[in-house]
Image (cartoon, rainbow over all chains, first blue to last red; front, side, top):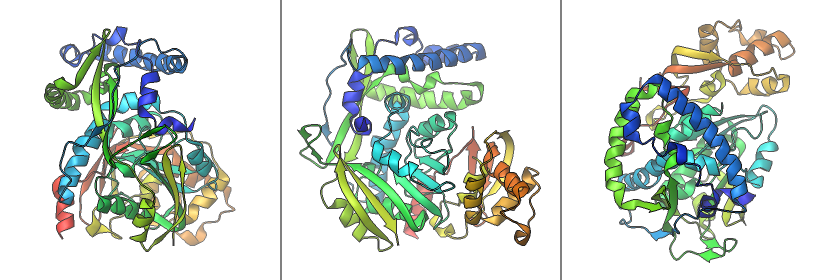
Length: 335
Length: 128
């Protein structure tokens, strides 16, 4: 189904919540004290098995969700509109990057169906084409066509790690500063990413940066959430919204430790503990399972918005802009 | 980071545009993979490659590929096999990348290059 990348809450509700009985004790603090290699290896293994089981269970759960998590809704943004680029940068670090880094594993467990439009685009690339996936997330498009070389990049370290574990090429990079030479990629995709930039200027810059690395006649497939949500049957009042993610604690990334990571982990955990302190208010408990509520910043696109962006960039041309399942998808060609 | 990925990469700083490649690779740990040889893939990739970067990596991983481009033939299967092997089957796990222009060093850890600029680096760039 093609709604997999735009229907966070529904998928979230459908996903299985009953499987966390054996790791509810594995809180950060306990793990920190018992930092022995064997224990960690065991945990890692357990975790992998658990993740497999969850994916299976999730499919079943679509039919009969046994435990409904608390109902959560979109919120209006609770910060002032950024006045400078640097303020916008800070907003995105706090309300996009750090949130995805936190929820990455959980996100990964809900994102495995490819969107047919993207799948078809990738499969129609010539053998030996080279492409980049800007904001690749959990890498669900990186392995679609094995006859192309597709490099994923994401600003979230945890997403790059997840992709690497799936044996995909992934690196950590800012969409505004792509680590690639100019004029060389045959194609690029950027799926549900550009709506996370918080000013028009930054969205244009992000688009300009992808166009820079494309070669002449190279095509970009770029998508964003739409303000009109006819398919989902709801509507938004504002273009800038905070979209909830109900995080299940069983997907805590710190369960994934190994020896090399130990030091880094400890540092991260210290930061995390601080963060958790701040986020205690957000915690929601229900029927023995524990959730944490997070919100990600989105700028929902309206009709004509991609056109206005492309108008700012003389090097490219908008070949197609359509709506599918409440997402705009555009094919943009470099001149 | 596979060799083919490295060949596409450059320094992220705007001041290094057009000058920030090939990134100098320091490799303390790598993995060899078993990706199957694909003639068409290799032939189509060939014209897109930056040869300076390829030669540096061929030397590093001891792959016999001639630096003299005029001797290369896309009909020579041995050459294509060596090239494919180099591009797809060597993965740098731990090390670093250094920009030949500004000397900025980017770490590679667990196979993942971290190309993020620090905040102060980003806002220096924009002020300039």
